[in-house]
Image (cartoon, rainbow over all chains, first blue to last red; front, side):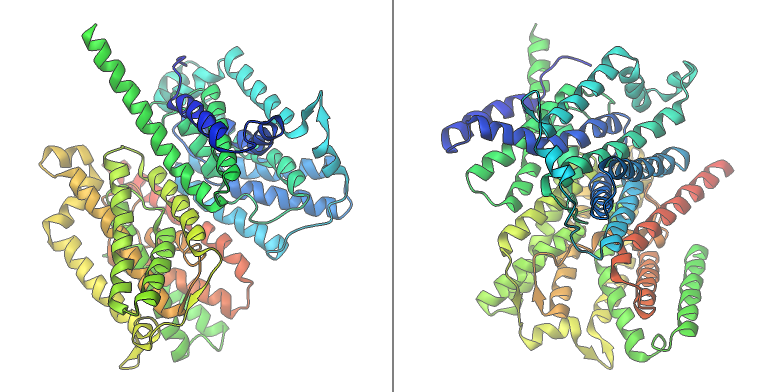
Length: 313
Length: 309
């Protein structure tokens, strides 16, 4: 867990300056809050995705699982069930898929990207079958009211996302969680010898990814006041992008949650800034691909620069 | 060879089951329809097979079909030239493939990440480019490529047969083919024995892109219209076809003929669901489950082979 600034840190500053100059209404408080609100769902996915990628895995099913959990949540609310029950069901759906991913990857030894691609298809199919491809509307007032509320002046979704970040960050700082996850990727044997129940722990990381996708359904459904079977399809790409942009690498098992936060903010700022400049949302998706490449190139150049500086010294 | 025989037996079994349970299955139009559908899946899956043989992957094939088809349609409409439109589709597909290759070889991104990013990038550009429009109504001469018949057999089946033969010779009897398998089996060993790994990988991803471009042309000719979502549901079935066909995700094991059997199996299952009047919304679920099953078999087979050594 080094303290180096990921390439995204520099990109974020550049983006902020460019959008502040050219984007009318970009550098205003309501808009900054808006970036936070839009980024909150993404952060909920990107936090566990960081841990999964650090363990040299991947979860491509998050967007589809989030969509399915959202549809379940909205359907239960529509049928008059309580918000608590609906949220529990959504979290349960997420946890089930997360556990399934973990079992497929850890117990059966399937490559993570294909295993989660398979569960992506299953989750997406279930969401379509449950709804017949239609939106679920008429979810009552409880969730929209909660979503519009503020906690100590902070919009609900931002408060939830920041709370989640704190929990993840404290867990990785105060416990040996962070070290364990790095070792999962790089040094599994040593971890087992140290008495950690490696497989159980590894499944747990995927389960956490599913659970967080289920929780994120609360924010997504609250924002849309409806459930839609394809609402979050592809959102896992933003999450993977945020993690990579935040400096977590696929091969070495290293990465930081703070880097991921920077990555989520960078993607949020990019999308919002392009919105302000009225670039269509379809091109925003494409620009994230370019952002990932830019961040990787910046990271590679920083490493190269340090190396030349180091050899001179 | 025995593995392919087992899989052909599975195809026969599914077909037999369908023939017994439905009246419409064993009719000439339906059988030809299945073959035509399978040939489209095969075209997309054949380039993908090459990338998987090198222990890589190309998740962008479906999105590549989408944008290549939309570009080809636009060029064909505005220039009134079939040749120019076809060339655009093939060239654009290949350029996307080459970009994937460079992301993998020059930026050293894991293939599934590079091509997954490409998927969403292409998808975004396609929606922006089409802006909700549909392009339809192409020259009859062009449409023959997708929906025409020759000697009573749909034209795409000939296209598939030609590429199966060419691809089979290419992978089995040329140095390039052997190098593809060698890279997949052990990349480091291949490099040490003089295989230009990066150049070969760039070529393999370019070929995968070009095959997506070709599939886009045939698909366009078949549908006679292009919309932004044209390639959206094509990637998962293509991956399923490759894996059912016995090509190993770990690289170095598999064949194009296997992929053809895989494409047939998958098309039969989807056709059967249609005939049993099962809602099309079930398709991603079933395809996802098939992918999981196929990978699991792949993993178990590999573990057994390793245990034997």
